[in-house]
Length: 455
Image (cartoon, rainbow, N blue to C red; front, top):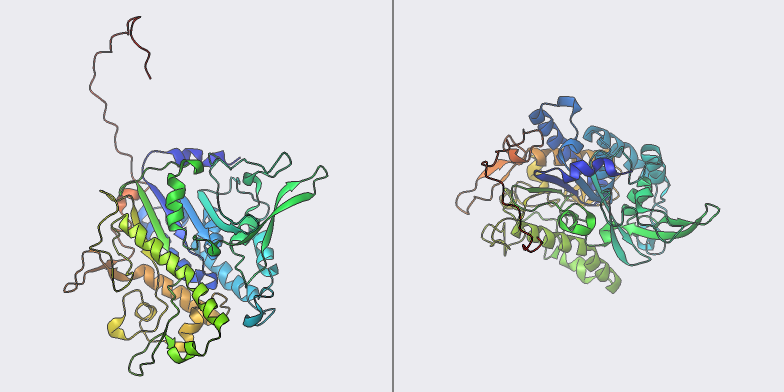
């Protein structure tokens, strides 16, 4: 089992990877981008309604909400079907908190039942080796009883694919997809940790478990850098080649959110909270504010690193120091891959300071500060807010983003998803380059008895 994808993974030619961030309800923003990408590639491929993103991407990896999306796409779902599931499922998951926010360090804010039921209904008893997975899948979770970040892939050549925990262990290839996805989505303070059976006794009863939290409490909430390592590290079995024409990684976020406090300026609209609010915070709240920012910081560092390994068409604006990294030298002599990050800035900002990826730029109108504050949360259940996130994602996929060739005096824009993007050389439906026969040469002379053996 699981060997049905080996030929695809080992096939010569460029490889395409889709990396999907965690972010709870904000996964609808991701789905808006993917809906645009699916429509564009369906037209470009000529497959029309038969096209699925699983036909294009050779590996789809995600964390938390990204793991849900990645798994359904790898199972050959249409993006539209995943969107419908989200609009139905999110209000059910976040319908009724068990405890208010301040008590979530004592018990989870929400019950696991709604997500558990949905995953059982839609994923059933499919395992990581299921032949229903039509492309590569990578799920990221944090194993808390061993203190390790787990990356589980459906590559039969992964060194741990058939590994068992002892003689009575359950092979990784036999883990249920529903358990792995729920493990990846078990965000601390929101949901209880998830137990995944590791072994069974002679009577068939579970004798040991692994305990998991959301993969977002590892460095892999944005899994793009880890996916680059996964497809190049021999232990995972992919061994894909690097190079700008050999490896494409599309990284899609769930909304850029940075918690800021600053002196209030009545003349400027901003998402920053008043600095007076910060001064009134208890020490524990300051600690929480610091911890809440670590995912943002790690993501920014990873995007920065990946952009230094590539020449992205639309570089992400990192900060006022490095800006879009258009003058930052590559870490190697040549780009290691073609990389593109797409995300929306869930921030209030004055029009003159907005970038094309700012929420208000994408939607074409201003929003109330309280509304944007609600959109930054992970447990959104309001259908109107969910619709805004989805529409913002669609707008991001159709946006004119700032091209890397821009300068301060000459801003150039191009379509985020357009006729020439993603690069046509990565299209899997393109005919393979003809094999040019080598010139005929005389066969080499047979080695003499005294010749040394060949290495």
